[in-house]
Every structure is written in C-alpha cells, then in structure tokens.
Length: 501
Image (cartoon, rainbow, N blue to C red; front, top):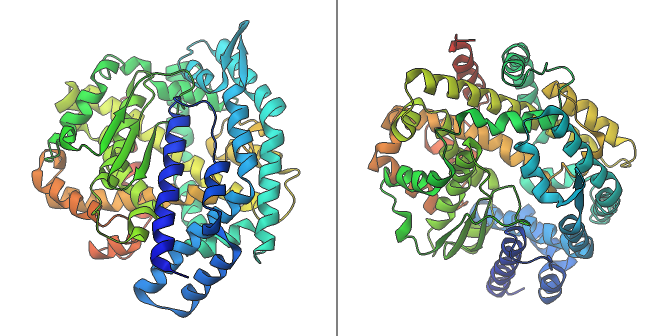
C-alpha cells in the first residue's frame, strides 16, 4: 500500500463527506447523498486495508502504532458505512420528508422539536411528543432497525462477536471500566438528583418528577424565564466578545464560518462541520432563543476553535482522526462558562443572586445529562452485545426512565443511539473537562476567560489536533489519568451550596 496516497485520498473523502453533511443538516440541501461519495472512494475501505492496518497496529509501537490504530478505526467505520450507505441515505431522506401533525398543521419532523421545546402548555407539549413518537414508530424505525441489524451482521463478518467488542478494540478503551465510573456517579448523585432536580421540575413546571416525560425536560431546559438575559440577537456578539477576552478575534479566522441562519429543515441540534482541517470549518447553530442557544454556540464554538487552530502541517491522522473525546472536552471547556458566575455577571449583567440561581439550574441540567449518558452507556452495551435487537425497546425504556426518573418512550430505542459508541466520547470528555477546568482555575484563576495567557495555553493544546488522548493530555498537566471524582464532587458541592429553594 502507498500510505501517502491513502492519506491524500482519505482527506479528500472526508472533505466531501463533511461538506455533504454540512449542506444537508444545515438545511441547504434536501437530500443526503453519501452513496456517490462512497462509490468514488470505495478503494479506501477495501477489506484488505482493514487487515493491513490491523496487522501494523498489533506488531508496532509508539507513533506508528497510534497512527495505524487511528487509520484502522477510520477504515473499519468507513467499511461499515459503505455497506450501509443506501440505508443511511434512506434514513436521512425519511427524516427530512417526515411530517408531524400538530393541531391539523403538517410540520417537518426536525422543526417539530423546536416547537416542542418552546411549548409551555403541558397538554400541547405531550401532544407534540406523541405525534413525534408516532412518526418514529410508523415512518422511521423500520429502516433504523434494518440499519442496526445489518451493522451487527457486518461486525460478525469482521471477526468480532459484537459491535461493543469491535469498538472497544478500535477505541482502545475498556468500556466496562468506564461503565463502573458512571455507576459510581449514579450511586453518588441519586438522592441529590431526586431531591433537587425533582424540586426544580415541580417549582418551575408544576410537574412531579415521577410520571414526567423527557419532553418536559426539553421545555425545562429551554428556560424561557432567563430569556431576558440570553437574548437571541446578542448570541454571536457575546460569543465573539467572550473569546476576544482570551485574545482570539474570530473575524480574523477566515477559515471559520458562522452559520446561524434559521431554516426549516436545519437540524435543531447545533453542530460543527470540518470539511478542511484547519482550512474550512463551519459553526452551525439553529437559534431558538434562550440560554440553550448560548450553551450550544459555546460548545460548538469550542470545536470550531480547536480544529480552526490545529497546526496545518501535522500528519493527517492527527488532524482528522484520533480520540474525539479530546475535541468534546475542549467544547465542554467553553460550554462550562454557563456555570461560571463571574462570566454571567460580566457578560449578562446578572447580580449575585441571579447568577447563583442560574448556575444552580444549569448544574442540575448538567447532572441530568450525566445521568442520562450513564444510562445510554449501559443501554448501548446491551443493545450491541451481539444478541438480537428484538425486545431491546423495553430495555431502553426501563434503563433511561430509571436514571432520569422520568418516562422515556420505547419508540426511541434505535433513534436515540449514536454510531461508534459516541456516548463514550462525551463521558470521557466531561471527566477530562472537569480536570482541565481545575487546572485552568489554579493556573489562570476563576476568570480565565479574561486572560490572554489562558488563550495562549488553549491554542497550544488545540494546535496538536487529536494527536494525544485525553489521558496523555491530563498526564502532561500533572494528573494521573481520568478521575471521575473531579466531575462528581465539585458538581455536588455546587448544587448543595445553593440554599434558596
């Protein structure tokens, strides 16, 4: 194999794929056409290439082993996607064409999520939720089932007993050990979550935790009571002002494009698309109003700044591949400003009580997400354990309903799943970010966002792309690997310290 040619073709493939995903999920292009791109680059994902990179990974050491590992994961994921590309296109097409009937009006399925999170009336919100679930059951789940069933067949053909064991190998991660860390989080936070989050839900929405729905959380998180602070028309301005405090003028970054335009078929889930790293980065946000806009632009802005500051001359594997927990950690590093009282005071004019109340709310929302992802990991390890998919809708409902103490619908059991155990990346990133925050607070202070030297520190980290794993980065900062206590203890202390309930 000509490895230089392989890297060159892989970079061209990723450029076209990411651009296609950007155009589709930004609502610019209706159809998602990955099939033609895979057909053009099918030689990248030949089964022989998987065996080639696997052999190098298993007989080499150091950087050669790391690069081979990254290329093996890329090649294997591409091989699976190439086999399923027609289903991927069909699933995306189904979702774009799907319509939800809301009080007699046909609304695009994706846009209906925006309506749901902004609906204050519980009865109407439940109606929207029920309508969305009917679309899942009647229009989307059939092809999602075909997709995951076929993926599991391909995994067996590759010589692995299950999808979970394949990705544990590809990621070089012990999923069970990470599950144990999250079991600790669930155990340690259970009483606090039920008492404090339950009180918040009842106070804000008049709904008891028991019997509430995930859609109720979606509206709670919308937090329209704080809209007076988090104004829609100041979103980009505040983001730019924040990063300018650490010496970053994003207007001088001709490689980063901000897409905040509202489009009906635009994904309600903000994202960062990276066709060219670092040359062409898209920061895409669907403004809905309120604090969630600010949280998402900070998070996705963290991705954009990471990839936009990546050194252009480092190897392909380190710019495009590697451990995505790294970039998620940098994204959470920016997002956690939403729990920084001083930042809230500086940029939104909140007084001490207002900032304290919002941070309390924001920390409880974060705890909800941490518990949810602990549940997702537990569920996805069962979903992908090599056994049949049948009956796992009930497993999904039981596990997720238990961790969040609210009703989940079994109809989401295949939709609420990300490829390649991406939930692992989020979990590792939350722990990584907690330790990175501890380091930055010690080195630069609580108001690090005002320090140019903090920006220099971050740009130095960002410059290496994803060459280093979260464990390697933490080791360089003086930590002994991922330690979940840095995540659990400060969060619980912050929540307990709020007395005004």
